[in-house]
Image 1: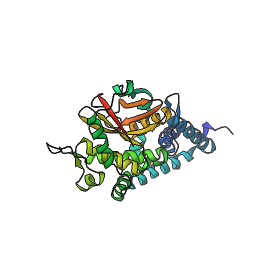
Image 2 (image 1 turned 45 degrees about the horizontal axis):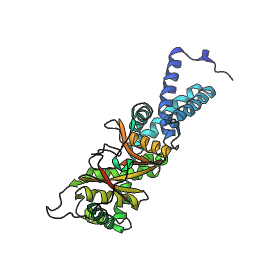
Image 3 (image 1 turned 180 degrees about the vertical axis):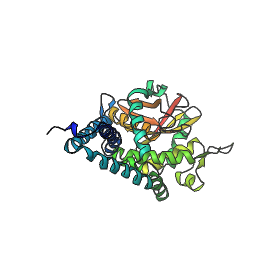
Image 4 (image 1 turned 90 degrees about the vertical axis):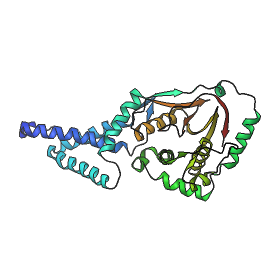
Length: 302
């Protein structure tokens, strides 16, 4: 049954077309928030497919009865307003998702870190032995204080994206809380002290780079993440395991979407034998921020 254009005035048709377009633009990201990430040859196509699905929905509604688009548009807007009150998917997320799609497909680059550890392993040095052993002994992701702290703050942010990114939202929420609250405090001048995650939580999230790395890896592992600590000249930082190339692309898109300001231009990572790891240093404002230096001399695998 073809749509009878003649029974509507020019003004009515303009109104219906405008509302149809707005409904499509609002509906597509909302549908996309419930679909898993889809990557094809490095391109993120999930939102594009959601736009196509929304177009079909809007077209069918218009085909059945064109004025039906008015209550549908009002319904979509009402859902967004209610979500705003309950701190879920809102108009801001719609804009952010479109921006993230453009950045993820066109602007943001992956910046693989080439360091000496990737090129050739060095002979173990005594200082390295001492540092690795000291830090490894302080990592305890089974501690109840650490676990409860981690679960609590993994729920602070990004819950509206859980259906789309799953556990990644929990990892990035926890990262955001720790990095926004952590304060740098020097060790004593004489000794290198490694604090457990429980100690750092109890002291109000203060410590040096070693303490931050132990805290971040312990907390993330307590909620199911895989982490490691990288030791470089004069510094230590944690890394989060992303998985293979496709899983890394999904992580990258999640970071672009969940950390929109400032715009993500590059994601810094290590890759070896198809395994991708991103930087979680306290010096970076977001996951995958720049590395301080490439003088890597040890990895603490956990």
